[in-house]
Amino acid sequence: MLTDDALLEKIKKVKARKDDEARQKEESYQAALSQVEALTPRIERILKLANALKENNIEIESFSKESILADGYYHQVGLMRTKDNKFEYIGRYNGGFCGNDDLYTNGKKTFCCDNDWEYQDITKAEKYRASEYAITRLIEDFDEFEKKFYKFIEDLK
Image 1 (cartoon, rainbow, N blue to C red):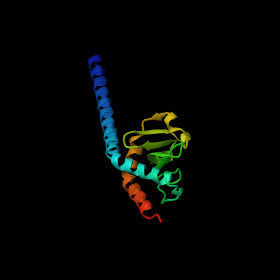
Image 2 (spheres, helix red, strand yellow):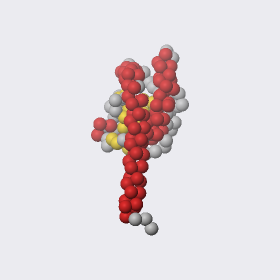
Image 3 (cartoon, one colour):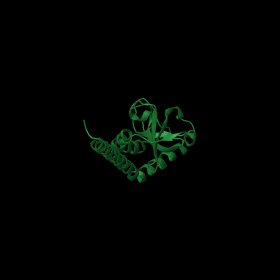
Image 4 (cartoon, rainbow, N blue to C red):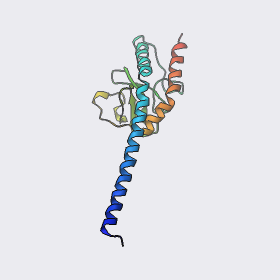
């Protein structure tokens, strides 16, 4: 049987390992958020143009693989509507993984909220920390969404 000192030393080592793992996980999360923040100018430009489409009554098709709107069927990165039908965020409904959370970002703010808030007042929704998985998927799929968005505008007739 180990002595009390040996047991206490073992407890300290386990705590140190857990603290190190938590620190590494947080650093990884913050690095993912930094990647989203680096997209801010591109996201802001997309949102500005998306709202110009809305203001000029240009319809954006939804529920198709080619749509630039986020939807809960394809779980693709897209424009996220707010209650007043404006575009203030891009993201994914259901977080992109058939979950209960919707992922929102404007580059400066990245968060999730329960998908019951769809088309409701997002300013009143309870917001919470987005998963690193959802953020990473958004980063991976952003370029494809951006190309699809600009192609949509270029193809307008």
